[in-house]
Image (cartoon, rainbow, N blue to C red; front, side, top):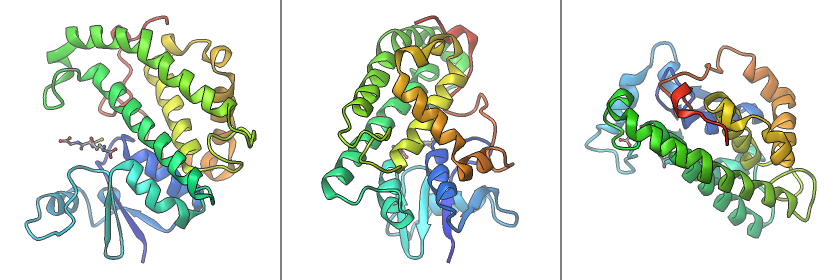
Amino acid sequence: MAIELYYWDGIQGRGEFVRLALEYAGADYVDVTREPGRGTDEMMELLDSSSEAHLPFAPPFLRDGDQLVSHVANILLYLGPRLGLSPQREDLRWFANGLQLTITDFVAEVHDTHHPIATSKYYEDQKEEAKARAREFVQNRLPKFLGYFERVLNQNPADHGHLVGKDLSYVDLSMFQVIEGLLYAFPKAMKGYAGRYPGLAALHGRVKALPPIAIYLASPRRLAFNENGIFRRYAELDLEP
Ligand SMILES: N[C@@H](CCC(=O)N[C@@H](CS)C(=O)NCC(=O)O)C(=O)O
């Protein structure tokens, strides 16, 4: 039975981290809300269910047979060994999960640059606070997170240009997506980033060129970034580092 991915239609959002792993591995999956004959109502029914025993709080979540799994990092922890995208060694699996949870935190901070006050309110209603939040993000948090991941790459004893161990893992795919999103949302702040974070820039380029990823990125399944997603391009929030 195909794996079912549940996520909001119309945006890459957090669902994209899961999609990249499924696409890279050539997994048999259905993107439920985008599937003809199915759709967002089906996802809402599940979220509103009064009988589902393993109720998810928010998308993305995944159904694999009887198993429901929510939260990006948890989904990737589940999928990794099944898709051949997790390290073999147990200590490295825990490290990979820690890195993915750091990416979760990073993504939440990216989200908060445009929604610093309330997720339930429009960006336009929190624009002034967003400017202050984005300034702090660009000046302090962005270099702290990217600097950390650059160090992880450099300090990987396997030294094969991956974040964990010697082979490509789901964390590398997610890091690609973070860089891609940052380049879209913060072109000024990211200008010259390859000079400051050469390892991450090389990783980004390598993942982008992997044949299954290149094919996916060129396909209609890869939606363009837009101003409803996590990575949004608002000129007033972007500034030189
Ligand atoms: N930690 C969760 C965050 C999930 C999340 O925030 N999902 C968003 C969409 S990207 C959502 O629908 N949130 C609804 C809400 O928080 O009320 C993950 O990594 O999957």
